[in-house]
Length: 108
Image (cartoon, rainbow, N blue to C red; front, side):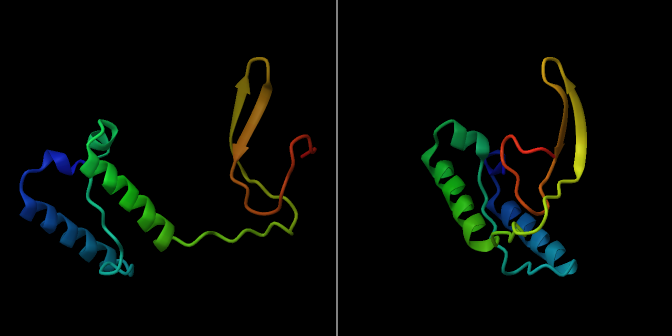
C-alpha cells in the first residue's frame, strides 16, 4: 500500500526483496508469495491503474489463500471475545464461530 508516495522504483524493489527475505527467514515461502504493490487511496479516488491493483490483490487472495474447512457437523462452539452492553438490546457477546452451526432464534 501507499506506493504512490514513493518515486524511487528501486526502493520499492528493495522493500519487496527485504519482505520476501523476512518471510523466508520465518519459514514462509517468501519467493512464492504474491506481492501486489498499490495505493488504496488512489484506487478510492478512481485511478484506473490502482483500481486494477485492488482487483489483482483480490484475485491473488482467492488463488493463494485456501478456503477454511469448517466442522459444521460438530456441536456449536464460539469462544466469547468481547461483551458489550447496548441500550435497548441488553448484553451482547461477540466472538468467532470455531465449529458447528447456529440459526437465528436458536438458544445458546
